[in-house]
Length: 209
Image 1 (tube, rainbow, N blue to C red):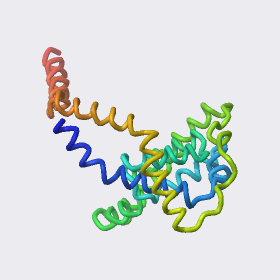
Image 2 (cartoon, rainbow, N blue to C red):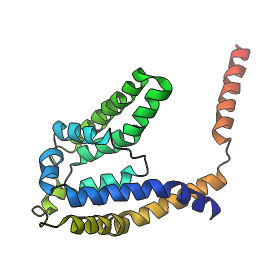
Image 3 (tube, rainbow, N blue to C red):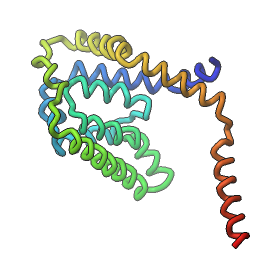
């Protein structure tokens, strides 16, 4: 339980940020935009999703609820995959930090690499599912009713921290339990031992020859 609690403490700020992003996207972005730019089983949807994900300051934890929200709002499987790949690799904050520490060339290389890998992954999923209907769009109603700014804020909080947590909470708990068990039962030097064993085996073969 101690290891699981430590993982919760490490992940919770980023998960909360992801839930907040999901709520804001749900409340303040019209559903028609998702259907228009991200809803088609086409490479253009993959491109738009990658361009959306590259600058967002979300890590691999925070991107999960945000990507699930995009999918529920009508994004295709390929677009959702592209967003999942692009977003954790970079962000405006990490690009600026990279530029200050490693220089401008590396700062440019990071988002380019994120964009390329996202386009590849999202494109492969789009090709595999090009004949499947987009169930998320089929379930979508028309654009949300007109709400005031404060009503949208309350809706964002309700959607991000109630609806989304209900949807993925059990999977997060399962993942945390599995991670805690791995932390407890797998030694810290497990992979180092494997590497040493492989190196010793290679040396022995060379010696025998």
